Image 1 (cartoon, rainbow, N blue to C red):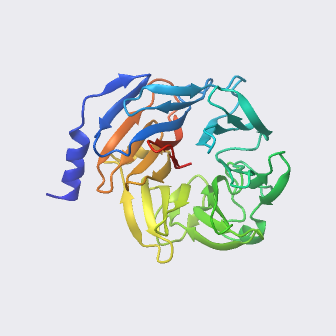
Image 2: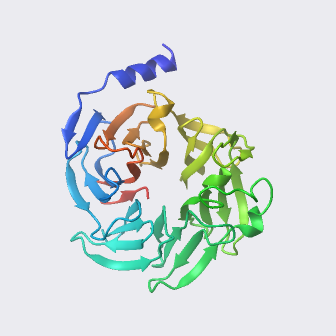
Length: 335
């Protein structure tokens, strides 16, 4: 039996659809999922974006709907060690919400966009996606909101083939992560590139993927095929896990050789993963993914062990942006 045949069987032999809380669970293999709940951002209703925590059946356990008018997208939600939730709202800023749905901390910056992380020292690291050339695309602020570090990429990327790109900003950074070595991992969507940047604001290494993006006009070279990278993370095994498009897939690769170790495409076809955005590796080896109107948990052998669809209706196909798993052990995985 071919790998393709196996994937078709996996996709077709799914349990009945279960509707609960507006979400539809189409796949659930109880003995293979990583136990816990899932915290996600939901843009199904553009006018009322929300943060939601669900169980595996799609039941809503907790949710937060921002009380102010939603002029921008709610793109990120991260669970902090104190069980509060850090959210990022484009055109507004970054907010820390407690479980009683009270705002306990805020940093107003309308340029904040896709991603914000609370660092161990209490500072907050975040990206700015739609910046013009030369403007900050990453910022770090202290608890009082004072700027302590920023990066604009000019010293390393004001060169061909990147210098003259102009599509939703220059670089269009869409995620940022502070690594254990003190460097910062930055996803540069418009360059089809992930960069590791030192505290001295210089790129110490980067990975560029191979492909031509019609939207930017960039034709980039690299060993791994793909464009518009989203949400890279460096795994404990030293590999990188990243969402790529053209083809639409999730890829794990060796940082040194750039050999692909694992990749996954949806058995339903490329369209099923359009606007794929995030992949988080869970402790049991599964991968929690977001892609447009669906969240998925994928086993190492490619089996879909959980899939939840967003509410139907509306023209917005970018309904789910990010999701993390809150394990039964109380720890958060992803972000």
